[in-house]
Image (cartoon, rainbow, N blue to C red; front, side, top):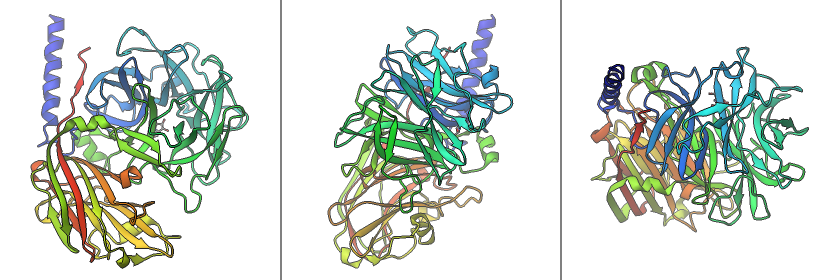
Length: 555
Ligand code: DQQ
């Protein structure tokens, strides 16, 4: 009797949440991005592949749509597209995490078993690092996790600010068999990747020198450290290091995920960086829009490294409360070192293409200066678009001295409606009939003394006629020589998120937008050229995207 009452209640709750998810009431709910059934979500935590199952943990408030009560929620998938939400893995129930189970990572240990390292917060806000292990390794989904009786394993000592000591990375093993892990911290006012070592994963000792510290940054959050293969079209395990790899150090600060490249010597744990974070003129970010606290993992089944990032809301707390949820995860991206060896490239994982449905294709179409071309026959609120532009008349490019020019400022001063020479050209997405609302992802080509300069922008200034949502415009320069290659753009459009990959993944810009008119089948898609110089769309493909299946386990 009790059981059947519980089942009926559960069914009613499920139906109610289905109703709340119908897109009439929920125009901003996404169709193929990862979201929990409800409430607040922030950082991705501990993504991993274990025995053929992908796991994603994430920071979640089980009780409301704003940050708080931070627990580790847990979902599993066979394809990184469709997900099953499991019961939460870690709750803040012990003195060493009573104020929150903050971010952390998983590591596959030498015996093949997975382990979670996460930050726990004491009632006095002091942060420590804790271990949790699966309760039952024969459970294919690793549903239950047990906190170690030895917790906390790392405590803030010797000058570490106890309130800024968090987010353990995936650990890697040196040739000496010792495990290494880095944590984000602030040492003597510098953003720092604090290094710890352990033989057995239980007893951790802080290394005298941090892996890296940076004079110009704030505290590092969610640091990540991993090798990338030079000239290889595949990812490598976190513990591999040889002359065919470089290392990436990623740190999250000031609302963005920045990375630097360098070489790592495990014998003395020396990371020799090619540049430092925020060096003048040097600004490599995973994404120049809304994307934070990302985390990578090595997918051993497909030999690739995959990154996830948190895409926050830009529409205020009151609206989060109204819709009952907050936050998305990015489409998982595979990460490689670009063939120049100077930067990373990111691309949506191949599996996302299984959601592609009806295709519309345009080839060799001239786009005259000052013109707009509607792409008809696609559900423009839920689409995947790939386009490449051929520029024939580069001589006309405007002159620029790029030193000291802030690309983001340039994009916001001269938005999509600016009449330039070569560009603005690109896509208008989530656009209303008549273009009152539009989000523009566009390029402009300039020339400087010795080369061409390509600017990529995501202009949200007209993304909604509603007041309230943040309409910041984003931008970056991309290292492309337009004499040698076409300008390409891939944009994933999903109701309230627009993820754009320029120059085959050399620059990514993610935007959250909240159209009031361009909703569902009222959304339109256009290619545009607002420059004076004509250009050609050499190819444009747009696909309707099916909805991913995200369901809650009945446990
Ligand atoms: N979010 C977590 C912290 C981390 C921050 C708390 C980054 O562990 O530093 O929810 O978004």
